[in-house]
Each structure stands twice: as structure tokens, then as C-alpha cells.
Image (tube, rainbow, N blue to C red; front, side, top):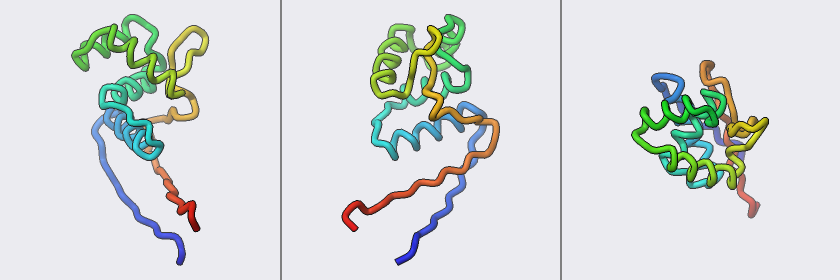
Length: 116
């Protein structure tokens, strides 16, 4: 049997919504089990460039009604998963999974049967 192709299209409003949707899909496909707050932090950090600056942390806390201590806990877990890295003293999203969210994104996901 040949490949099956299924196309889906989803329109999101704003960079943060697009980034959150992307990281939600990435989490699901790779079974990372990221929480909604972790996805928000990854999306925010990817767009802002890092979560090390005090003004970025403050803005995230205000936008998502959370605390700096919560950010620290999330960063710890995301670093353990390899989603976040420390580069040049800054906490950033791993460059392997950072996209330009101002452009259309096309994802190709292959699910292979390992038994065949």
C-alpha cells in the first residue's frame, strides 16, 4: 500500500498563537508531555530570543499570570528535556526547534510502522 497523505490547515492569530500551536504539536508527536504553561514559555522564549532578561520574565509573568519561581521550575524541566539550552549565559530554546513564526509553516510528519 502506498503512502497516505492528509492535509490540514489551521489559521492562528498572532506569532505567539502560531508558536504555541507548533510547540504543542512537537510535544505531542515526540511524547514530551509538555504542560500548557511549558508550551507558553517555550513559544514566548522562541519569539523573544531568551528568558534570561528580567524584562522578558516580567512580561511573561504579567501576560500569563504566573511568578518568576514558576519560570525557574519550568526552565529546569525544559533544560532536562533538551528543549531549552544555556548559551552565552542565556536560557534559549534549542535552535533545532526554533522557527520564524512570521512565515507560513508546513510540517511533514511521518508515522512509520516499526513492525513492517
